[in-house]
Image (cartoon, rainbow, N blue to C red):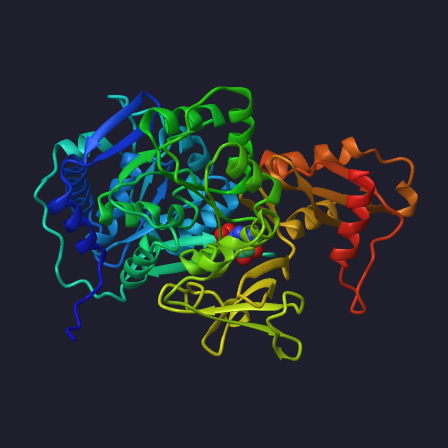
Length: 537
Ligand code: AMP
């Protein structure tokens, strides 16, 4: 067989060639804008030309700090297709982590939404490698900013060449994108996505038994484009000629329901928090969601009750999937086998609420304390994955050796697998807290609390939350001299200036002691049970 390179350029070219009439529907601050794929491709080539003129070279990183909209989609293709690396930055991180990420990736140029400028300004003097900032605004004038030099996205595009030609010698194993994922402790860890990985992951997203994404779909990625490439939906969507609906900044459940109705969205993707919000909206309002053939849900466990309501009350098929930043992300998806359709509704729901079976193209093993676990739905082990869209290391990071061993990614997720190969996540080995689809590091909060003069020990654990999936609760042991004298408000005031608002624990409990393991580590699982009994009673 021929050895032709699998690059993103062929994905864009296919869209240009076969689907010029298809649409990208983008919600921005000034409302809904519609672009044909022809316009999208022209603008993408213009952006590549502009970045080239700004001095971006092959292999260099271009960062984005942006919501889901057409300009971000243009960056998704312009940057990799010109041979540079698309670095999507999580705008919900602290300025310290954002500065670290930009410096560590050595971003040359940053593309930023106007409302995110103030956050970036906080990093301003820390950024060592950035040579230019491009503001992706609808307004004719650039906003006031302390950053420099600053360019206007649309003005750059106006002056650029729409027939810019992409290099045709990109290696399929060259980096196309990168994304940082939060760590239990310390700085976020970078993952590089290659052209080949993105192409093969996109194919997997189109398989009938996985995402089944196709030209006929109207796809709305709700999952942010800074979170594992919006699960690859923009890449695959453009390749397949899918109509894309980009929900833009600060969307609400109402807005999502309206977009589903008016744009006749057929498939959408996001974390459970989003779907809990949508469910509430559907219960309160009156919407036609008949066009939806699939809600893809992952990032955190999807509650069974939610799946049931979507499917039985609203007749919206729900697909529970599992993945990580390190896995591009699609790795497991809960699709029933033909003969399982005959099971009772309860049995089917049980299976559908598991994370599912392995997507074709990947390999998996589940390792317990005595080797690979039995397929009995009971024995627990760590999920290990390998395959062409699984990362092989963290970018310039010595923590690589913890997760990548003997050719396998050790996910840190503890799972069981049943007789039919359906995997269920039972716990995480790490104790990060996932609120609204974003990580909160318990260790960072603990360290901050323990820096307070009155605090002897502090441990932060998650409790389940109806809207956000999980929220942090802090458990604090006060020093003897402060017992009975320190109020929780004092500790809240101490934390607030140090963290993003959504990181602040929902409550602070004063305990006499924190349960510990034999080596003196906090016994988080026991503590979590204790706190859940206390808080949720
Ligand atoms: P991230 O890299 O931010 O996407 O987070 C990846 C982690 O999210 C995984 O290691 C799991 O712990 C968790 N996760 C992802 N999908 C699911 C799911 N469907 N159910 C439960 N946990 C999940």
